[in-house]
Length: 332
Image (tube, rainbow, N blue to C red; front, top):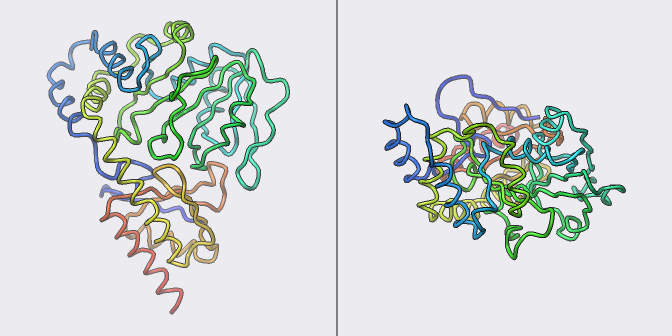
């Protein structure tokens, strides 16, 4: 299994799934302008950012709750229920946060084709189902009719990667009762270095959740970065366009190398690749040599698979060079 690591302070390429085009310029500008005010509480800024989020998503302000990332969104929604569920393999944050909050967690195991089973019997009041759409680490979409058939009291759709997918947001056309949506600032927004997200639901549910947050849970730097990003929404379009254009080329590069038994083009800013076992060691060494860091998915429930992010053109060239050296060595 490939597990490439970086042992010095030089910049790593393809660092899991960070932005290949850097941060939003307006976010950086906002942070720099706010640097002289870090001795003050960001009073009023959360309300301003929440209103901007609502306008960007096309929902009412009363439907929006800012959280310090998806972990807080999961924590506060767990306060509504007795039991949590999700698919496995899936985002490990859901069972981890359920355990931390003392709530039972039920896993719905995907089959060998990464399709979901029949929904568990007995779902209803007191249950919440967490689903990343597209998924993590699978990077694919679950069938919409399967999602709609879930009878849990709440279903939270985590749309961290939605800008890179073929399915429109669950917010399109309005939310059915019990449906919640989480939107992230870390992927298509190019702000993986801050902790802020946006939870959307009906106004009554959001009002129940608001007291569950800590006092001023989001720092001034994150709030200013988010506000700058929302003033420059075209950045998200540009980043998503880059990924959607470069993703098929990355898959072609991996397939043409002859080093992988299977390559899956996901609906995210990364792809999944299963290296030929006999070549995995050489691939790890060459990736490390060029500072190409890929994610070993064994820890995510996908042994034998790698998660490789879409990078900038220079990044992809370095990856191609690493793959080429492995190919040359194996042919020699």
